[in-house]
Image (cartoon, rainbow, N blue to C red; front, side, top):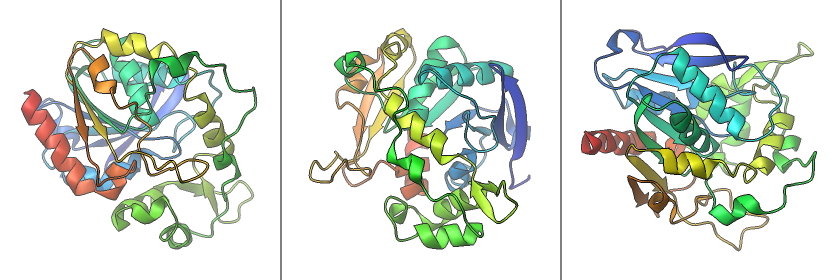
Length: 294
């Protein structure tokens, strides 16, 4: 059986969305694992983790503006949820296990609510899901960009990117194979023909973050779900790190209680980048959650 996934390009919600399918012959022999990456990443960051889940059919999607998916504008994070719901329908998912990280977990919650029956269970890894009141604060000013918009966007090679990032936070906490996968698959040939640039454009990534709390409808999705939901939280943010601690959890601590069948798991020795920090441990956590829900 191939050790490399198959790349799909699928029309969904008016976009061409990319995804990577692992172990296609195993489809139907147990639930499909549906992986959704965080802002600024791509579908192949899950490679090391998926290798620790042998014998399972898996699909790792790439959200709009990321990886090999079409890039387009958006009005709120609900758009990422609608994209994912349309893609799940296009794949005709039935009873899949959804595994989302950070913003990807936020979008996964909405996708599961928009398309009931596609998912039997969700595993949300440090989801960017805030306190209900936070979604009623005044919106950010139009055109506001996160500092990620100023990221370096020219690299000689994936190896050069790896060497630059290896000792820089937050990438310094990544498992080396996970960092290598991020670099290897997170670049595309540069527009000017010299070297490489990020597959998720810094300007796009920089726009995503400020919209984090401009999606009040996510709580309707949370309360609509009738399936088991595991909320995995990393260590708390350190308020002494300015302007904010990127390694601490952004998740509202009581979140799991808002789901009809929610369960909370906090890992005080892990960071927000848990899937890349500890692929093997995260894979074991996923396998345990699937077994306990079954």
